[in-house]
Length: 39
Image (cartoon, rainbow, N blue to C red; front, side, top):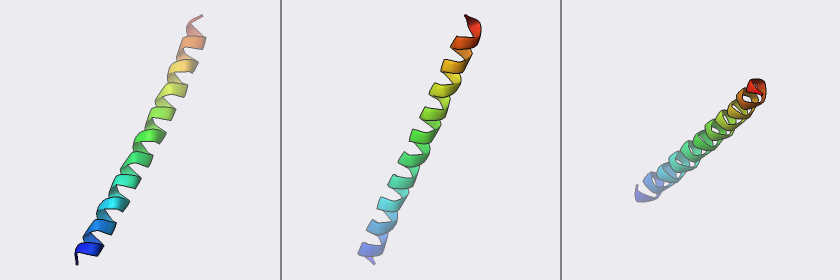
């Protein structure tokens, strides 16, 4: 029981971290493109 909960929590943390990282990367590329368009 505890093992499955721990495994689920770990999976959740990993997936949310992945989503956060990809969103951050996406936002940075958009920002760079926008800055390039301004100049």
